[in-house]
Length: 226
Image (cartoon, rainbow, N blue to C red; front, top):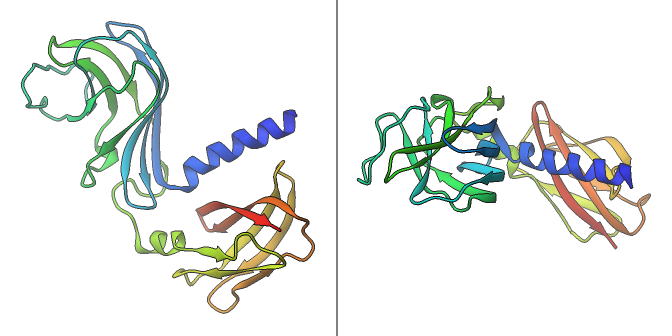
């Protein structure tokens, strides 16, 4: 049971990172009110940028907004004009739990250091998260090679005795296959521009996770074998 729980947690963490070109994360700290939780800004391989707030717990309040900023000391009013040097990501969806916010595509995530929750109408500082250093590749732009790697897919799924790969990516991709409790069953298998198939004849019916690796690029996809 412990092993299954650890694997499930690791798959969850990997699923964040493998879909991201870069992330920056920080714990929330108190401002004028008690705030706990985690803020993560993420640039996905699909090209989107977003803020994920997880496990948030704070007081509810009127007109609470979420900002990307370089200072925790921002001044707000009920007007629609955001403070200088900040990006208003909109109303706080909930004072508890998880929520997501879209970040404009032209924003460089390295240009901002804080996520701030503030009551816009009454200029009341609720709390903030100081974002850590970037994890992953480039927070500014998404490379063509990353998009090509992300295009990698396999079929059929469900499969019987083999899977075939399609991809715009021309470099070698290492394939590892794990069972549902995290045991590594296949490794040192590669696909590339000339080799496109992996045989599965030694695997039994069930649910598996296929890990694709190339340099610092990685993805995990679900595979069902009938």
